Each structure stands twice: as C-alpha cells, then as structure tokens.
Image: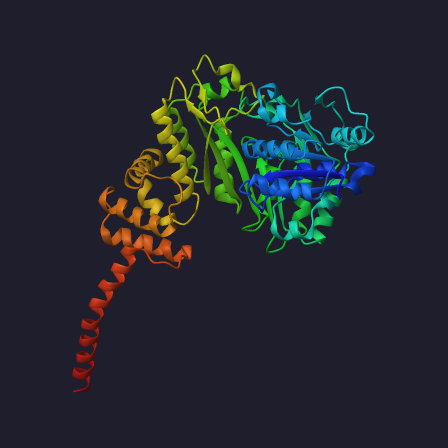
Length: 505
C-alpha cells in the first residue's frame, strides 16, 4: 500500500519527470509514504489505472501537459469511475490556466495552479488529517528557490542508465515572447550554484553523463554559465554530453573562449530564432538582435565543435509564407546542424491570445492546439507547411541524407525543399511511417525525375549516404547498380586474363 502516488504520462520511456521529483523531494515527513510512477502516453489508460489502484493510494497526483492531456483525462475518468474515494490532484502547465473549460478539472478533486513544489505536500497533509481545504482550485504563492530541496538524488540508477537526466541551474525567463508560458515570468532566478554543482558532482559520480539543462536562458548570466561549463570541462570524458538553451544574440568573448574548449560530441546548443522578421518579433514582444544572432550562430558553427539545434516557428501573427521562407533561407545559410521547424501552438495562459481576432488566428480545438490558419496563411497553405516541417525532420534533421540534401536544396533551401515536400506527399499520401529504405528510393526518384540530377550522380551520392546510415536493407536503385557492375565485371576479367597471356608470350 502506497498512501500517495505521484504520476505522469511521459511522451517516451527515455524521458523522466523532473517536476515529479521536485514534488517528492519536498514532501518532508511524507516522503517515505510517497512514490513516483511514470508511464508513457502509448500505454492504455485502463492498464495505467489498474497499476495505480493496485497500490491502494489515498491520493494520486497527476502532472498534466499538452502532450498527455487527452490520455490523462481518460485515466482520471476511469479512476473516478472505479475508485471514486481515491483523491485525484492535478497540476502542471496544461491545467493551470483556463481550467474552468476543461473536463479533466471537472473530474478531479483538486487542482494546484502554478509551481506546486511546496503546495502539494501541504495539501496532502491536510487531506491525510481529514481537514480538506474548502476550495477545489488552489493557487500557489511565490516562494524562494532556497526553500526547495533539490531532487537529483531521486534519479534512480535505471534513470541514469536509460533516461534523459533533466537539470536546472535557474528558473524563469526575463523575456516576454507571447507564444511561451515563460512570458508570465518576471525574471530568471538562479539556484545556489555551490549546492547545484554539488548535486551535479553526485550525479556524475553515479555515472550520469548526459545532462539536459532546461534553463530557458542558460547564457543570461555569463559568470554563472562559465562556472557551470568549467565544472563539466574539468570532468570531460568521451561520453559526456551537455545540452543548453542559448539566447541567440548574447555570446560574449569569454563564453566563446569557453565553448571552443569543448571537444566534438560534448555540447549541443538549442537556439531559438523563431522568426527573423522584425515586425513579427515586435508583435509577439520578442526582443532579438537579428544581426547579432546570425553572427553568433555563424561563429558557433565555424569556430567550435558544438552541435546547433536552431528553432523556427510557422504561423506567428503577421508572418506570411514569403516571410517565413526568407527567414528559413537565412537560417539555412548559417548551416546549423538541425533546423527544428515548429508549428505555432496556443498554449493555455499565454498572451498570444490577444492576436486572435486581429490576425484571424484559428487553432485546432484539440491538443496540441496547433495553428490551422491566419489572415496571412490559409488552411491549405498551412497544411503544406506542416508537411514541409515533417519531411524536413525525417530527411534533413535525421542526418542520413547529408549529400543527397546538398543536391536537392541547391541555392534556395525553402523553395527547393517545399517542391520535394509537395512531390513526396503526392507520391505517398502520408507524412508518417515512411521506412528509411523507401525514403532513399523516393529521394533517388525525385533527384532524377524532378530535380534534373543525372542517374549516375544521384545514385553515387545516395550510395554514400546509405553506407553512412548503416541501413542493412538495400534500396532498389543500389541493387540495380550492383547488377550493372556485375554485368561489366566478366568482361573486365576476360580483358585482364588476355593481357596477362600477351605479357607472358
């Protein structure tokens, strides 16, 4: 029997919930009576309900996000149907705003809005003492980060071996980008760095080598950034990997010097560009020096070993397809390792809603609330751009078609790739579940039939990509190439034998 269970549905097994670990670490005297149970969204809700109720909990706390809201709603409905006496407490960004409109909130017993690191424990104390609070909706009050007990000891050995280890050196964000919930923050606040690095040392000694920092602005305070990077540089190993989210236009010389000291394969930077259009940036309250951002990206790409994951968003208010295309081409010319093309989503609680009427922004009423059309991009065009983003992820960001992409994109990355995207959808009618072997065959067809590349050049380039990919199954065009080579080889062997005989005579 476990009196209190903290649970969530992660997108993938290798993800781990830092939020649940914060809650458990700050349960105080109730920590021993509390357990974390993590599932994945592909699990059947009825199976998850069974596993939770087997432990006969009095309280189940569920962490709700945009990616698991539908599955978690099903889970709560089942739990309350089978075990109505079990108290269900909700928390998380998806239910902290506009909660009066959500079926899951109506089903649950309590909702904690905002950062529940301390509030959840207090609620559990009241419930276990049979002194329930009078209100279903509980709004958290601000607290200092120093009041929190750090949660990193709650990563298990299995987590360290098989899951992403999320860490945060600071919370909050000083910027006000209206598509992001961080726009509601007033500033970014650092954790005590000595204590934080002590925790990182323990994780490192336990075998953790992949650290994903979830700080929104890792390079906001350069002094802190340098100290953290120095810590890991002193512990550099072949398998150490660090992920940071960078402010694109803030890369002073001292940080550049530090970045250059990290070897290949050890650093990944997520750099949010989102849009290069100054008018769009002003509409969404995004302050960004585009010239400086481009210069910094170029410097990282050409002067360091860091892997760059750069973000752009489709569907922002005021941006049409031509504006997005210009921004995409500008970013592609900087040659980041990956361009993550995201589709705008209306996250509950974000200030983005103020543009809905003026820019006729229409969103999917179901999660993930993606943009369907605006007054600048109609629905059919948005669908084309959705496919563009999906195929870009499959082909370019996969890294398996490096040489083939060089042939396909030529001088205008957006125009050339959307041609490929349109052709792929025409030929396949699908954007998911395309086997890698089939992708090789389709790209070969496109290059030779549509892009004017010779059969020989396309075959050779994709042969090199195929070899580098490690794919065991062989595409049809390479099988044909092998057959042609075999047909020629007997003749070469005969000529070689005849030459040897003439030399001997």
